[in-house]
Length: 332
Length: 204
Image (cartoon, rainbow over all chains, first blue to last red; front, side, top):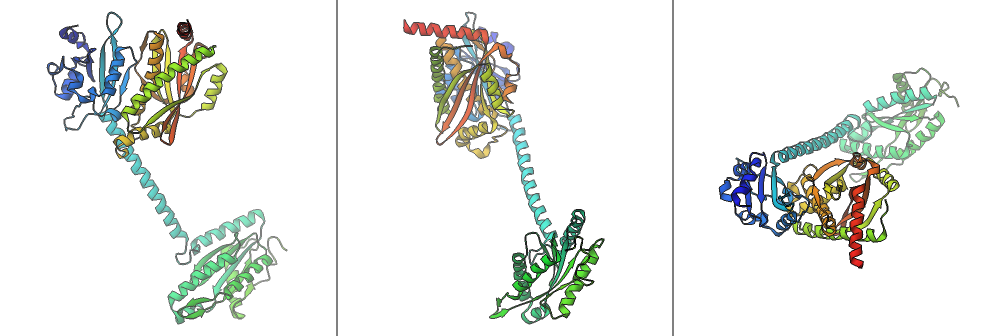
């Protein structure tokens, strides 16, 4: 086929919205559509009859040439992706960036049934690529923001529920927890004990050794408590040197054993500070939840028992006033 | 559908030749060395097919497909679990162009399409050339679907499926996928006849 008739037979592909280049067996260009003229600035007359590999070095590489030659032997269509080939036919957008091309080459049969030409079609995927990349960027940003927000939420929750100095739960979450445990004890008919604990002569310790020493003692006290208590107990700092211990599913006798163990652990504490050894003791009031008792009354009874322990000489545990839990939900 | 051991060996040989050529091409394109292994080539009978589809389950697979018609008709597909496809692309392209500039999740399609195209063309080219049959091809296709979705359009009784386990070995790691060739049953008979002719020529 001479170049002119070759060109004419492909003119129907001139206005396709994709780049179309047709090659003969020698890989000379015999058609170059308007789309490619517009993309590259090369007119059809510049290109026709010239060797594709000389015009565009990417097309002249052996791994591309061998696949194009295979097409003339009847091989299936060949895909050339932009990731692996960059720009088979360099084409620029108006802003001078390169168009990303996804290309496919396929053989065309001539009248004798043999493959006479190869069509290389080029699809401009710049726009879809940019949109996908933008989507991915937005997705990554959202994921990052989400991670950060979760971290902040966790921190805020900790700040709202924990006492900063000792790491124990604060008054607010202690009261919330106590309300829950009271409901649970009623629902399942369990006993529930509560200890009010106050460190003895803590003001004197602060006045003598300073607030830093006081803070240090509180921190050590919190650690000792967590060791001496059981896994099911909850200790919270209610204010200053005042603490509460919720003891679910615990009888007064059981609570007393734990309370005495705690007093002993505190008594045995010896903290080196500024060349001296600091010690402390605590007073504990123990109450067991009575039927129909409200939270504030329950707390008040434990508190009163704690003051009673102070009056009786400190470093001791006293049961709540009004009997020793004679009206517990499940009497011993 | 029955295939004799001799036919099976010859078909396997043709497939290996095609895959060898594909591996050569892929290695020219990427900086890392890829070794392509085919640990298993077998014809799936109706029971095998049901068991195979069951084993694959509903997982979404990256599929590159090449449909053909002529002396043989059907399609050939290269199928990877999506994470495997992503990993393979990142290995092949990431080292070449720098992973930072790539979106491997959304934009890997072009690359996996080309890798699949090279492998499937290698196999189909080898079968077609050596058997001397005449074929036409449809444009290569890419889609993501489950294994049963891939076979949904074809009548179970009218098809013969060849399963080729493919392992793309890169240094210490490997990506495993399946190459599936579905033949419409009458054209598969023609392929067996062509294999026999070749075997006859070789032995005479």
